[in-house]
Image 1 (tube, rainbow, N blue to C red):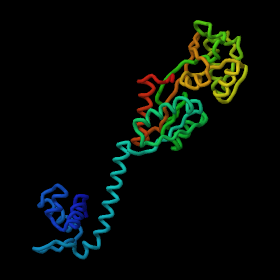
Image 2 (cartoon, rainbow, N blue to C red):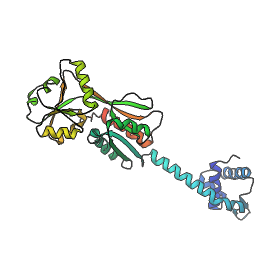
Image 3 (cartoon, one colour):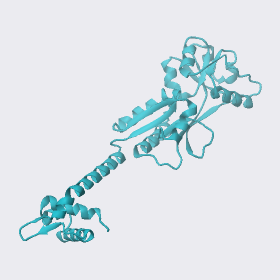
Image 4 (cartoon, rainbow, N blue to C red):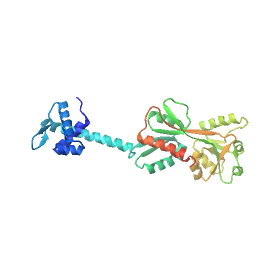
Length: 302
């Protein structure tokens, strides 16, 4: 039995209009083509669906029984097709994005606000989390897209470079560092240094040690959140370092930011997705928009 959608739509059109002529017009086909579709459907089912006379056409007993069932099937199918069309046209959809706390309170809100201006019907849900859990949330399917610093390679996670930026020193206005034309890492040694604890500082220490073995990089204080470090800097308790995508937060604390050289140390940030798993139209749209916002428009410094 080989029943097609065209046959079912022809059946519903004839049942609705009570006329082969009107049904053919509503489906934009010829009357002979419509008659052929109904004949094929009746042959496939092995029953007569319409009783025909010179005066009128009406559903047979079997046709009357199956009419509401076929009508529901086509209505549900049309609903599914409309849903797909809306998702494809970005008239609706949900995108879940995971990012570390600092990125979630600086860069990502700017990207989301700009994206929503173009696609107001797409719901972007931002999950701020620990750096270490960004890729695990992508892997588990809890989020569609993850954004964060470089992680150890994982065959199940696709990582695409988003940007690579150098470290900057952050200090209060009028600080002694502001008088220097260029800032070197060695210039920080004479000032209380506040950094983030954990892998952030550990990896930075290794990078600096390999480049400058004579530099003793020992933070005075380590904290969990950059907002804490910036608050301490604003209170005159020292200086800190960060990546310039956090410039909006630095400005909020009315602090100054300058690039560090000798050597220049950078950090790479990636967009993570599940390897071999396609994104929804909305998620793919946001994924592509993120790269345009950062790479093409150069918005990574706020």
